[in-house]
Image (tube, rainbow, N blue to C red):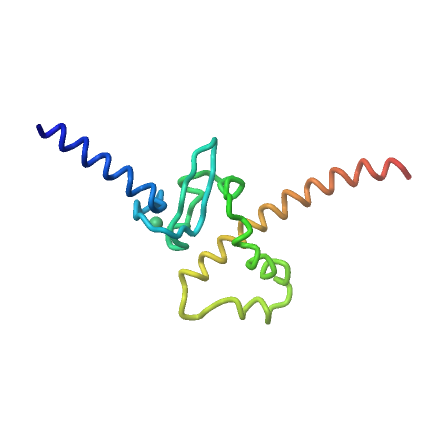
Length: 133
Ligand SMILES: [Zn+2]
């Protein structure tokens, strides 16, 4: 009898997961998600920027490559591009919202890492270009 009830309960749980997106970190189910990742065909959702902190600890250093909704973060890129202009850069930081600042910083750190990888790639490719001259 109880196993039948369990089956019903499990069914109910499965349906509710389909309604929203289950956050992979806090297991909260919400209709909106902050980050969607897809690794090896498996969708993973992160509900908020709070849960997106230290993602690399759970998903590895390359987790950013598996983020599906990258376009949602395009508005953060100009911050990285103008990082030499201190004034513009500091506007993006909110004195009262330290968690958001940390999140932005983690994105910036991640972009720096990618930038370095790209620079290394450019260096190696420009070497081969020089052979034409
Ligand atoms: Zn969460």
